[in-house]
Image 1: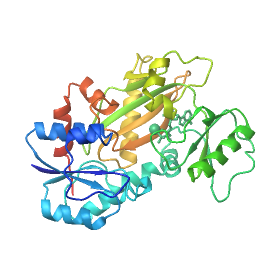
Image 2: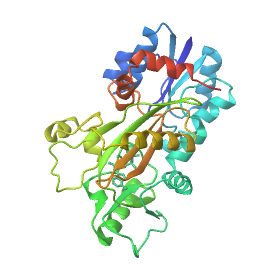
Image 3: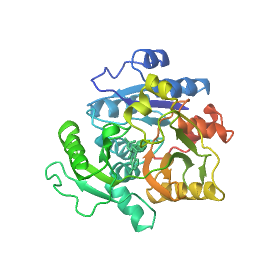
Length: 333
Ligand SMILES: Nc1ncnc2c1ncn2[C@@H]1O[C@H](COP(=O)(O)OP(=O)(O)O)[C@@H](O)[C@H]1O
Ligand SMILES: [Mg+2]
């Protein structure tokens, strides 16, 4: 197949520039794109690349000129703005070109954390109770809110804006953190019920026929049990910090009787209700009391070969090339 790998960069790039896996890994710090391209080439596909920043006409021109059978969509922003992520598959649909991964609906529903949770509440899925503090109209009181709370940006990803101070023991700490989110990140803040428990990542593949892979878990290693444990930016991305505390991702530890089945069923339901297609990762917490609580859905999760999605597929016996080929085969217009 002729495959165009589409991804985003935070600056303008010549549309004719071809990105090799080496350049992507070493100069651009883009291991996912590097892994996917290496794999597609290994599978015998003809691969083209386009880095997207702010030029719609470059995208259109490239698709017209290269005429790919499929666009492998790894694009997470436009104008370096992650809120614009859904517009890319929307454009691909209008161009009637087949593309991989989530459509615009799933991205819009999941990325709007308030909307996603509201839909799930309607379907009786347990989510953290929450309030929204708007940037232009910040909350001043949190009447009757039960603490501790967890304060996070409503429209960011990848643990941006998530630090130890996201955990708030009382009203003052929660409102302080919400103010920080408004002022430093420039967005609305969700003030959520803090959910203590194990952190689970459940990868799902497919459309009408959906496969749920064995759950993965974030292990907090030597981080003191007396402190709240959650995926701060550092815990997710800072290799030295992770090594220092023994924080790591791996196959989920043993579940109490019957819980794994519930995890799998919940992930499948969330995936379907939020209209995710192609692939997705559903993040949950399992409380010490055995309750499963939805945290977030990620349409188009990272496809880096070492990351949770590919690793959970591997645990189900699907090699990385087989996974990439399945994603390619499930591309739609
Ligand atoms: N209500 C909550 N209670 C406890 N921990 C939470 C809560 N919401 C988020 N977290 C922690 O913060 C991390 C990042 O939150 P998430 O909503 O997934 O944002 P992002 O889009 O940045 O990944 C989660 O993986 C989890 O560890
Ligand atoms: Mg998350």
